[in-house]
Amino acid sequence: MPRDVRLAFFYDQSLLVRDSMRSAWEAILFGLLLSVIILYLFLRSWGTTLVATVVIPVTVLVTILVMRFCGMNFNLMTLGGIAAAIGLIIDDAIVVVEAIYAKIASGMARLEAIPSGIGEIFAALLGSTLTPVVVFIPLAFLDGLVGVFFRALALTMVVSLLSSLILALTLTPSLASWFIRCPTVGQGTAVRTDEAGGPVWRRVIGFYEAAMRLALRHPGFTVAVGFTVLLASLVLYPRLKTDFLPEMDEGGFVIDYVAPPGTSLSESDRQMRRAEEILKATPEVESYSRRTGAALGVHLVEMNTGDFLVKLRADRRRSTQDVIASLRDQFRAALPRIDWDFPGILSDLIGDLIWSDKPIEVKIFSNDLKFLK
Image (cartoon, rainbow, N blue to C red; front, side, top):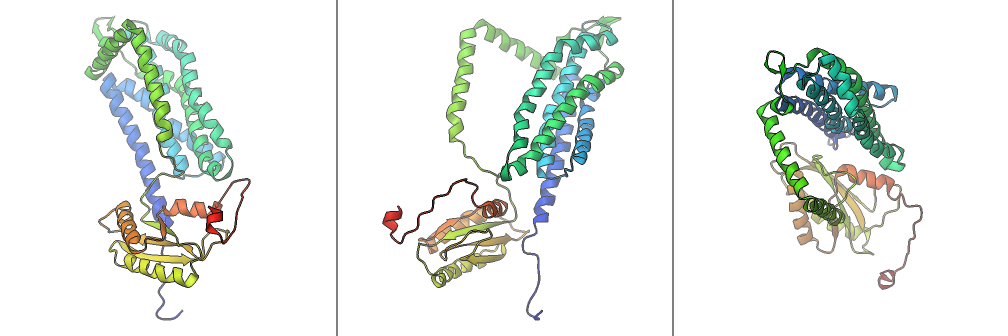
């Protein structure tokens, strides 16, 4: 190669992957830690807390085994599914533990309390677990790019939920027979359920009891509040913005631009050189590349369109969104006749590659702009 040519990585997607994977693992471990702390604060019993929380790592291990057999690997969707499922995984164990604990607290022998407690809540436990399973299973059968993304998420969550249900009915009762101990007031006298546990649990029970008495005393008002919340949800739902991927700081971004129709390639290039001067003057920008009259996808591109791929410095002081906001104002002031868009790198690459998945496209061509409008 010529001596004045230097090779360097321009866009290293592995950095984003590593950061995202680390973040997902942190969410999983943080969720496990919070579950242990909250359970102990409410129950004030290490045995009960251990029985409930041991289900989480076992369920995760079972899920990883199923992933291995299905040929799946660790990625943002599978790890995201595990992280999102942790809160649902522990629900089954908590319900079983609480049912057994309540029976023991009422004075029943431990080995008798286990089948009695599970028998009372089995139908509700089965229904509450299968409900999210039914919600997520259809995502596994989506087609196209959306299916590629969400199939892994759906399968991971379904496996986690079903594993937690089986473990809650098998492993949790077995551990409960060994570790759950109910505190007693005197010799052979069990405490009342609302007197057991810690001070946080007793306050919650007190608040719940007061709220339930108020709701039952005024049933009409309670139903009205429920319908008000439902109507508010229906009103707010269409107002929420939607997007395929969440916003993330990728250490760079794309600048899509569209000059007025009919702009020649040389004129588009001249205007974009003015935009390059703005990019060079931005201290957070490490490097950039530009395409004019070309794009990544397989579709045809007019001479008045193109894009920049901008890479930011790792030691920058401003966030990616702050840099984008500043550049947007500068570009619009310097080149007001050009339409600018600042998508993320990953979302823009996906958009260029799939371009359009519509079954029918109608394209109209004419030199008469008024007629086209």
